[in-house]
Amino acid sequence: FHALEFERAKASEALKNKELSHIERDRRTELACATSVEQVDDINHRYNDKAQVLSAPINAPAKAKGQKVQSDWDITVFDIWLLAKSHPTCVKIEPRLGDIKTLLDNGVTVAGISATRVVKSTVRSKPTKTIEA
Image (cartoon, rainbow, N blue to C red; front, side, top):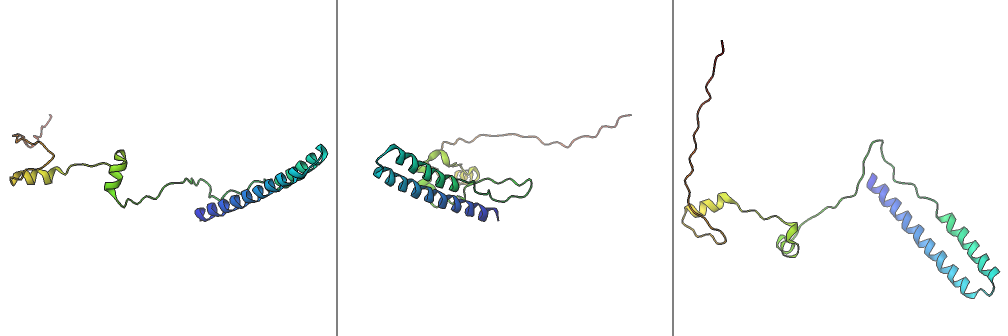
C-alpha cells in the first residue's frame, strides 16, 4: 500500500514540476515583450501568484503509527564474472577447501594453490565428574 501511495505522491510532484516549468516559460516570454519597469513588476507579480498556488505541499504517503519506510534496491546479478571484472570489491570469491582437499587426495595438481601435507594431532577425552562432599 505504501509503495502505491509513494508512487502517487511522486506522480503528483512530477505534474506540479511540469506546471511550474510551463509557468516559468510563459513568464519569460512575457518579460521579453515588456517595455517598462511597471510591466515587468506586474508580470512577475502575476506569475509569482500562479506559482505560489502550485507550491502547496503535497500530502505525504499514509503510514501506520510506528511504521518505518525506507527505500532499498532489489538486485539480481545476471553475470557474476562481469561484475567481478568491473567491480572486484563488490564480490567475494572463496575457495571450497573440502573440494580442494579431495582433489589433492586423488593426486590432482590444483592450479592456483600451494599445498603441503601436514600432520595434525588431536585428543578427545570424556569429561570426568567430580563429586564434592
